[in-house]
Amino acid sequence: QVQLVESGGGLVQPGGSLRLSCAASGNIFSINAMGWYRQAPGEQRELVATITSGGSTNYADSVKGRFTISRDNAKNTVYLQMNNLKPEDTAIYYCNCNARISSLPDYRWSWGQGTQVTVSS
Image (cartoon, rainbow, N blue to C red; front, side, top):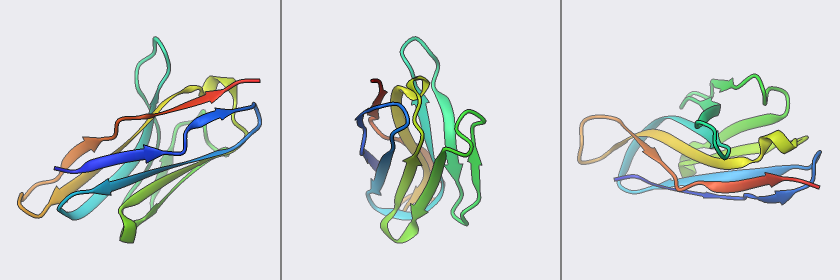
């Protein structure tokens, strides 16, 4: 079982910045992809950004040029630096990872509990 804990959410004014962190813990053997998703009220959960174990990244068009995903493999942690935030970025942000724990032969997806980001003046 892999546990993911997000932090760094909060209230910020339009144009401001936030940095989200997500730490994975458990009897982890290795982690492939890690990512951030978000869900606004009344909307479906959508992809924000993903990053592979080798550092390749992918972003939703709506956040390109404003958000940056990164990871620290030694700490099993993924980050999301969010700049020039807009009201439409308001959502609950979830991290996920595709990880293998030592006692199992396969990789499985795990999700964090989410952290609220609110962009408002």
